[in-house]
Length: 248
Image (cartoon, rainbow, N blue to C red; front, side, top):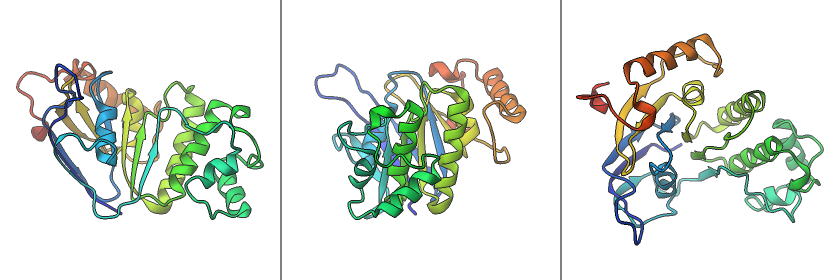
């Protein structure tokens, strides 16, 4: 497992008139689950790409440890439509046996689907395959870019259970980008709120709620209400006057 240190001073895309990311610094201990919440266009996906090593053109440094295995789950499942489920999984682990694939699919609630093409699966089923694929490499760092977006509540809840079960095996340091504050409070140990672009950290919030949690739990609802009462502009990417991330 790997700890994570992020110290970004600035990130500007080529040809852009302004920075996408501003000064953005945080750490995550090995095995932590950290959610990143902020308005659309704040640069959250760019941040994940930098951490994954997919975008090296930035001012600053990211430390994830040498030879860290990184699992990445995107907003879309990104399954190749011309390959069946088994062959999509073998893209990351070519040596997987049929038995191992069947066992993995059964574990995420998809028994008997190895020979199915992705287009024959529902959106929720495709996302289960995407989660399984990310965990096949036993990731030490797991990056989740809104993997549950646009799902109905029951489907999302079932996928939260799949994620929790898979994480329990290897406990990767996990970063989740989401617009859904209830989702962040239900899943994460900490929630980092970022401002409008150029993104900077405006609040680092510890989630001190017992597990397991659901988005509609009374405790999650209360925590959501308290945050919004104390920081009404938070989801819009605005910090309360005089607030400092390290002081909250």
